[in-house]
Amino acid sequence: MISVWVELNDKSYPIFLHDNWNNLFQEALVYLCRKSCSLRGKKMLIITDENVYDLYHNPVKQAFSSWGIEVVTSVVPPGESSKSLQQAEKLYTAALQANLDRHSLITALGGGVIGDLAGFIASTYMRGIPFIQIPTSLLAQVDSSIGGKVAVNHPSAKNVIGSFYQPECVLMNVAALKTLTGREFSSGMAELIKHGIIRNEAFLTWLEANQAALAARENSLLAQAIHRSCEIKSEIVKRDERETGLRAVLNFGHTVGHAIEAASGYETFTHGEAVSMGMIVEAHIARLLGLISPEYLSRILKILAGADLPIVLPDLDNRLLLKWMQHDKKNVQDRVVFVLPTAPGKAEIFRDVQIDVVLEALDAARQE
Ligand SMILES: NC(=O)c1ccc[n+]([C@@H]2O[C@H](COP(=O)([O-])OP(=O)(O)OC[C@H]3O[C@@H](n4cnc5c(N)ncnc54)[C@H](O)[C@@H]3O)[C@@H](O)[C@H]2O)c1
Ligand SMILES: [Zn+2]
Image 1 (cartoon, rainbow, N blue to C red):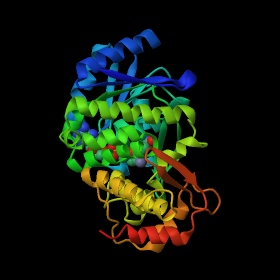
Image 2: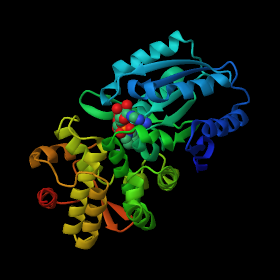
Image 3: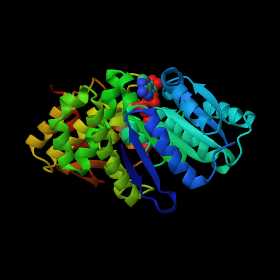
């Protein structure tokens, strides 16, 4: 149906986007055969979680098996706790037991947790083996499967053990999003809306105009939204693969969002919900600094609320939130770094925001 080429010199790869498995795998087969001659006889470890296994493992395994690949599957419990070194060790054992070698493949079938975990295994097993992403959550399709960040968590910090590792290709089936819960769907919408806010006002306006049909998960409209979003993220990654500058704009909403996740113990909110509230607080900071108008702040609030995302900050202690913001791994020395909107479709990095302004924005974001 549609594809996006992620341009990264010798690590470039395609994202194939369809509304059914058959077409998706047909297109992927043509591409992979052209790239690596023969897939017949190769071994593959599919890594998935229990929910996605029940829903989508069969068609995916059948497609790879029909290409002559020897497929084994490891199923992990759903949820963030699977992004651990303990889980990684179990997966290395599974890869060794299945005799995966340097020419074998690892496939991530699932949401962002599975993409990050399976990508981390692929990047380290035998110093790195080829990797295919099949993201099945909206968040994974618009965000985590693009750009090559792979990681597991340490008990005291998220995503601190990882690397940059690009897949061979990314296969997205928009029809698979039908089975996501409303909360998980909204969570992905937060990152999609973020892409409009930071980079493309026309996309933001389009999202506003099509909000109801998107919420109804109409395939062709969803595919258009995901396609635009993938283009925006991959254009940013192409210009700054290792986040030495521009790529940091993708962190809009995340300085505060990560602090909300950490301060509430990671169980209360999904990542997208925390990022939604984080975007609100950071948009308040931008308004207090005179970077954006009150009208644009209202526009941001309205589009997030329209996607069923939380827009009022929960009752978390300001000092605790500040402590976590100061821990953020994006910080350089002791200053808190914020990405702030400066106009519709534009965001910039600010390194010296006064703590008083942050506190005022946190309080403003608690008012309905
Ligand atoms: N690598 C990156 O650049 C990057 C970017 C953003 C987020 N992330 C990471 O992504 C993770 C969050 O990803 P997520 O929100 O996809 O979480 P997730 O992988 O936990 O998936 C959310 C839930 O949806 C279920 N699910 C997935 N696809 C489904 C489907 N089609 N139908 C029904 N249920 C389905 C999963 O089993 C899980 O219960 C976090 O660990 C975060 O750190 C990484
Ligand atoms: Zn995010």
